[in-house]
Image (cartoon, rainbow, N blue to C red; front, side, top):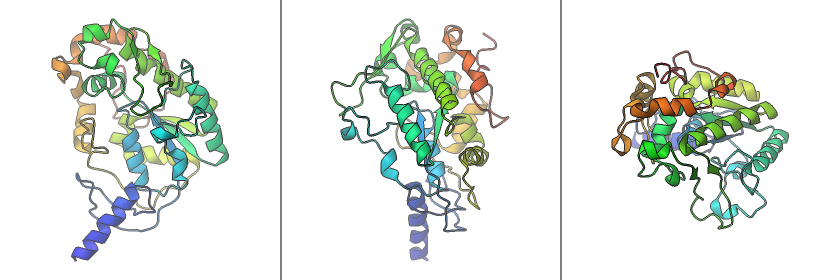
Length: 307
């Protein structure tokens, strides 16, 4: 019995790491399997792009729990691999044209190459108010934008995106005009929408859709890519990552449906007291071009309609 349980865990863990894995596994809060109905997973080669805390890890985890991925080395971008020729594609790479290294050109070229290989791309976006609040909590490479700063300061200043650790010193990352943190969201989402329009193998997906309706979200992405769904869909109940104060699925659903992020006191002050200025700075024109999957996801401007 112990050996059988160990094999079950190993198979499910393998699925989460891109090894040909198991379907029909509902992952517990510790991401351990409760059942195993099948051992054969369809092949789905896709790449995930998105800003920090946009659901990229969740998208990978849900996908890898249900599919096999080959040519994995094509996706992975180790810091040591950057040599000025862009042989790797970092999932958080700035998608704008503002960098001296031309990151947008790098992304466009990679997506075009992926198309020839019959690979697909999904770009994750998130409710702007929730996303900004999460960056205040865990800024990642946005230290100059949010770390140890009050909202009044954040909304009055421009900021730079920090170079990731161990990347070359001559790599140039963009500066975001004031209000810097809001412009990070605007720039990324605008660019992702443009990329989706320019490439038939790239689409935008809302983080909230994946949290509230993971199977339906993966079905839409699979249909978009021309890939079959697994016979038995596997979902995650636990956090998809171990950093950034991530939540399990029940907590994430509660946070989305009840707008709990609005009153979270990150840095001693919630975002709720600054919604008027933030809402005025958000580029709402992109909303019409972002696919909407679940009817249960609150509108991205719902936190601002009363402002």
